[in-house]
Length: 299
Image 1: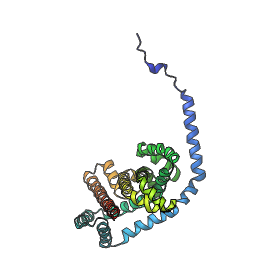
Image 2: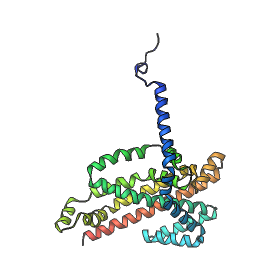
Image 3: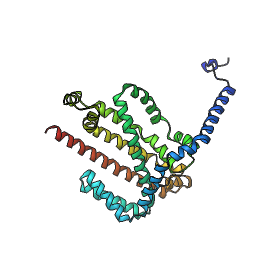
Image 4: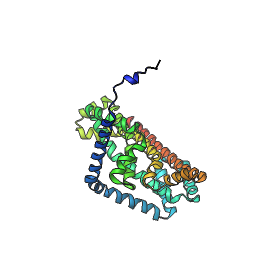
């Protein structure tokens, strides 16, 4: 007796109809790419110019000058001599093992992606905090962005813009931006209502309440979102190298395809070092900000 399965009774779409739908969608996206690809690429030209300039600046500057600036920024953010010393040692080892140029390329694209994510994500987070309707629209979009496999982002971006720095930036930003949006929204919504009522009673406008009350009080939460965005940007470095983004990801990808264990290990460790430095610096800055706000609240 043949085994009966519920799958045999399930109404399946005709294969020819499915193929027709796929061809229609593929054709529509190809036509969109041909018609608007150059215009969209032109829109990102200023960002590309800035990224190229910043990368050249890091590569052309003397290593000691770059290291001095990085160490100074780390100390200003953390006020920790230990963290500053660890940063110096880490970057000296990166240079010693011949990974300085790729590290500078990776740092340039990560910093640009983080700036773009902050510039786009914080306004969206503010809009979500101020409107339940915007939050209802954005939440499922953010869910899709966070659960979609990272490789899937590359398909439409490469079809639209080809390979290079800008497609890589767009793919990284799409992957990394949800945390800063979500935590900006959360941080503003968690601001004490009594504080907002007091600000309103003192005659503060909506703009003043946002920029002088809500954003400063939500800053530690927003900084946590920025921290996660940086971590996710670094996680995307190797995948972005598949579409021509130069940096530490390309040697890792090369080591995978050619079984170069040492190359992959060293460049992977360099990515880990960058992640740890960015993580500790952003967390220390967030804690200092929170402490500063707490001290002011007692005044």
